Amino acid sequence: MGRSDVFGSAARTLPTPEYLATRLGELAKRGNVPGASVAVRMGDETVVAATGVLDVEIGYPVTPDSIFQIGSITKVWTATLIMQLVDEGVLDLDAPVRTYLPEFRLVDEAAAQVVTPRQLLCHTAGFEGDLFEDHGFGDDAVAKLVADLAEKAGQLFAPGEMFSYCNSGFVTLGRIIEVLTGQTWEATLRERIAVPLGLGRLATSANEAILHRVAIGHVSGPDGTPIRVPVWEMPRSNAPASSTLTTTATDLVAFAAAHVSRGLLADGTRLLSEASALAMREPQVQVPDIGAVGGAWGLGWNLFDWVGGPVVGHDGGTIGQSAILRVAPESDVSIAILTNGGDLAVMYDLVREVFAMSADVVVPEAQLPPAEPPAVDSRFFVGRYASNVVVFDVAETEEGLELTMRTLGSVAEMVGGAQVKTTKVVVRDARTLIEVQAQGGQHTQYAFLGDGDRAGFLHMTRAVPRVAAGESAAAHGSEQGGVDCSAGGAR
Figure 1: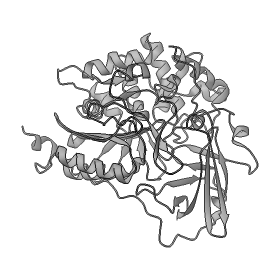
Figure 2 (figure 1 turned 60 degrees about the vertical axis):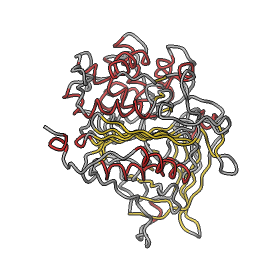
Figure 3 (figure 1 turned 90 degrees about the horizontal axis):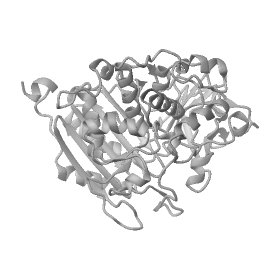
Figure 4 (figure 1 turned 90 degrees about the vertical axis):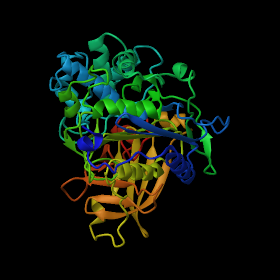
């Protein structure tokens, strides 16, 4: 049986290395990206390309074997480990977390009693999820952050009520993995994923990364040119969610291929049972329509209902590094793009082109602000929305609606202090605002949830609750926190 018999049109083809290199270079230039790597895999064939430099100060070139931080794409790896434990019969996704972590506490004791691993996997546990405190390099870092939840993870809504992206939920899953396997999350990941897949260029700390051609993160300097970030990695306490996993684009699509094959590896062994691999792709919760992510979430995977799909994937962002992974399981095609600064959004053009060429999948064009915004009562949107890591102020000015975002916490400090952004927005529909100015061809969108005259939440993958106009974010949540550098997307 030939490939076309299994996966469809024989006209589908892999892009050439020359094409990938040319387009990657063009997009990196457009997005002010210092360096990038891409891998496209169809079946057993992988095409790779690289462009730019690993570090603008030293100038080492990016090569296909260069490693980049993959940020929140790590969550799919952690979800895979969790599903392995389900396969072994030692974990029930619908049992309370306290079945496995008796010490598990949240600010809301009633919620802590009922939160389940399934809710953590699909971001419906409802507690404040962006805690990035540094608990050092020791093997107890994850356990210490989970202990912090008792005082710092306030409840936004009842468990299971809605979707709100939650890094701390995946840290909690990482702690469950540690307890059930008797070793660190990092050791388990190597033993159960890296070794079976033969992934040779993988690091989970700066000490390991330095042995490879490793990318350094960059942010925009005062004049807009990329400058190197002052720290290389985020705290180990968030490793199961996003903070340390570093690898190549080639290894990332090799990981994706194991999911395309429903957990079956080339040597006949299994990474996952077929049932668990398929369960990870099943919708668990709908996600507000803001364009930056898919319309539903599975068990770890973000789900995209695109023409020619389905497609699963995840994005990632750390301090000055960003990543994209998209997988079309029925076409046996995946693409990974890794960058070390600049505007990641420009790279979605390459995803669009590759999927049209190789998977017969149509990636939707970015949403544009309407030429004539619908007439709605703007008071529904206006107000302050705050969590322990970000404050949004939506105001009505003489020139229209304006949105100001101010980040807080430890990660903001890592990149030189709080980041403040004010932008003009217009009404996309009765429950959504969209930025007038595009970045990398994408107009950021914000959903607003609520049935009354005033929205109860601003939703940009996180559900950020409305607070009183004079109330600070510290009063609403904890005074300390961090910022997932993937703001605007689920990373």
